[in-house]
Every structure is written in structure tokens, then in C-alpha cells.
Image (tube, rainbow, N blue to C red):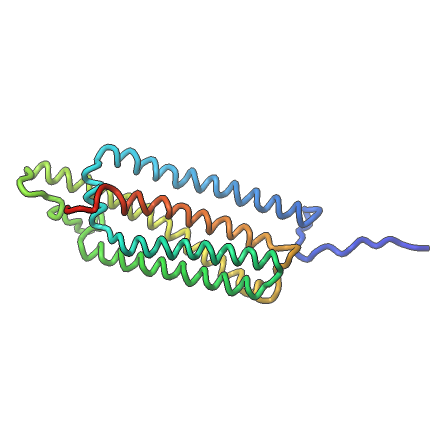
Length: 234
């Protein structure tokens, strides 16, 4: 008497899913739903920026002049490079090459750390220039020759608002990067030991979506803060 035996389930298949494909679709749907909430979260800040930018265009242009556009451009290139290494990590996972997955995740983490290091240099410079809102913000640097004291004070307040938004949005972006790199570090060991294969690479794919979202946010932040107005004299 012959007996049919079902093929053993994949070790990564959770009990509440029938197949790995079903599990992958559900996981990616969950990631997309999460990213939609992130869009709404950042969207509120972008809306606030738009309203105040339209209300105080001169102060926002003046605030942009205090940012280091060279470091901003370098960071943009670094983050675009990290998107490439993240995409290569996903591709390696799809090919079942776990060690390349780990290598490309390490490369992405290195570029992410470089980005945050450059931002730390920028923020240190901002602190030295007394541009940190609420921490001895120097209103004098906003005064123009011949500007009445009351008008100069108001203009400085508008400029301080620019930096409130700048540090809030870039700081929040940096926090998302740290979270992403922490998850990458968690995946390094299983990737190196062949956890992900052609049949199962969902965690790396979901992480890739998250990292690309973080990169896209910066692509919007860079022109809004660094390229406001002209780069002529203050």
C-alpha cells in the first residue's frame, strides 16, 4: 500500500500561511502599508514647511545660506550610493548568494554611517554658529544694515523657525536611518550563513523598500533646505 507524503514545509514558512509566496505578498503589503503611514507622518512636516516657506520667503532663503551646500551635495551622493548597494543586496538575496547579501548590507551601513557623520559635522558647525533654536540662537546674524530693531527681531524669529523645521526634519530622517541600519545589523549573521535563498528573501526585500523610502525623503529635503533662494550674497 502506497502512501503519499507531503513535501516538508520551508523552515521560514509561518504556520498561518499556506505558501512562501502568500507569506511574501502579505509581508510586502504590510511594509507598503507602513510606508504609507510614514508618508503621512513626513507629509505633515512638509505641509508645515510649505506654509511657512510661503509666509516667510526671505527668512527661509537667508536660513538656507547658512547651510553648507557642499556637504549637502556630498551627502546626497552618499545616500544615492547606499540605495545602489541596498538594491544589490536585494538582488544577491534573490540569487541565493547570502555572503554577497551580507557584504552589500555592510556597504550600505558604511555609507549610512558616513552620511550621519557628515550630518554631525554640519550640526556641530551650526551649533558653533549659534543656529540651534532655543540654545542661544544668535539673532544678530539676521539683522541687516539699517533694519529697525523690531523688524530685525521679527526677521530673526522667522529665521529661527526655518532651523526648527530643518533640525526636526533632518533629525527625524537621521533617526529613520539609524533604525534601518540596526535592522541591517540584525540580518547580517543569518545572511552570511545562508538564511536567504531564491525561495525566501522577503526580509531583505522589505528592508530594501524601507531604505529606498528613507533615501527618497532626503531627495526632497535637500532642495527644500539647501537650495532655497539664490546662493548670492546674504
